[in-house]
Length: 569
Image (cartoon, rainbow, N blue to C red; front, top):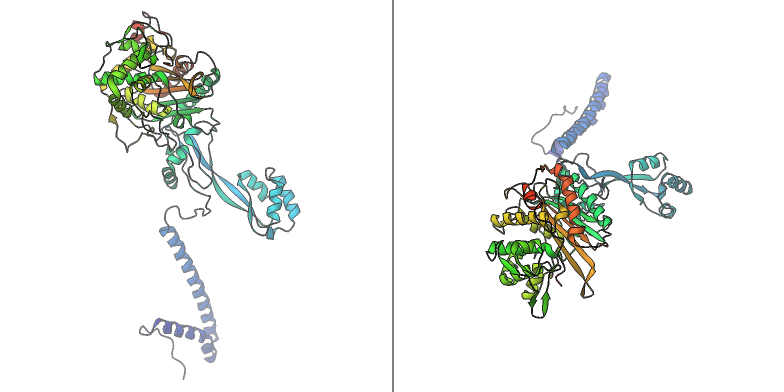
């Protein structure tokens, strides 16, 4: 009796249902022959083939739909090679490219698949002159697949590919490149071949850069490439003109803390002098001493200090480089850069006040910026009268140029200490703190402007830009003694120095390390560079030039003092 046609039985276990279905299909052809129905035999065969193909295509379609709809963003078609890591392009604040990725290729050879090894070595050497013969022989004579050369450009890859050699393969590598070469190199830092930041902004913003790359976005820095170019150009010119060992330049927006330019010369050194090098900076510190005196009410601009003779602290004799031998007002102390006057003020204020204000200005801690290289200062261990005197005119403490920039910003923006930042828009995770009163800030702005009009900073003047600032000079400690032949010349500036405390205002710091020419003071080696920089970057920053009645009132009536700051020794 023939077996009845197959009908699914829902009550049977699934494996029994599947077994009966297969049995029915397997014996379909036999039943067709037994019933003498060849046409049914053909139809069954066609049906089975169509069913099989349909099932395959349905599975493929379902798999493709799942991959398209369910795979996370960036998963489809992404490169799985560990070196093919996505990092966002780094751009300046205006979108100009600073760092990007270019796909290179690693050349690999499996010697087991190479038929004629001597010929392969000859052809590869011809196509890639930079690969060593020793390396080729080692790989070709080895027993496993090895890399021959990383970082092939697309052109080099094409040249090797055209050889059509067996056993030769390529793997993509994302290589970080910096199209501007050495420009802003100390700011940008580098990333390694594994796609991780190693130094500079690449390290400081590593996770943010990778996150932006995953989204297909750029990562903007606070740097303005036009400002950076001017800074690097003028800094190099100043360093070469003065035959200096090194130089540093920093330009910031004092209202936001954004770093618009940062340069360390020479550019071929790994050391970023702006954030990692320590200096005793000399008379620029008189700005902080005067600010503390004004802010505490211990002095005003008319307070008098006896500089008619040396100031004695125990057996130590403090003198002025160009002695005036007279009683000076606080304004004259600043404009004449009197070591005696500021020493007397610092000793009168005492260690607690001086330490408090140095802490407020950020001079006792590493500059708060995203760069990991930001170094802590070398601070005094004791704060006796002799130390206070030294601190008042920039000796006894070694700080980084970045600390100086941050501190000067606080004195010129209404008295708010704002952490410096390389992130466009500044830091949003740290609140500014009030360190001196707005009135003290306005007084210091006026005093710094007077110092350029009629004091030691005259060579920093830029027509119509109302530059203000303070010179600084210091001898370096060599073998336990301060050596005048190893000096540092600095000029810390702000422009425009007039207007309300919340006006747009920019800080420029130039430090020349061990100039070989004479005189070596900041007014000669650093101030002229500041003036040229301000003159060139003003159009980029939207700073308008205008006639300065203050210069007419003071500069034409009162002759400028010489650059008179000294080493205080």
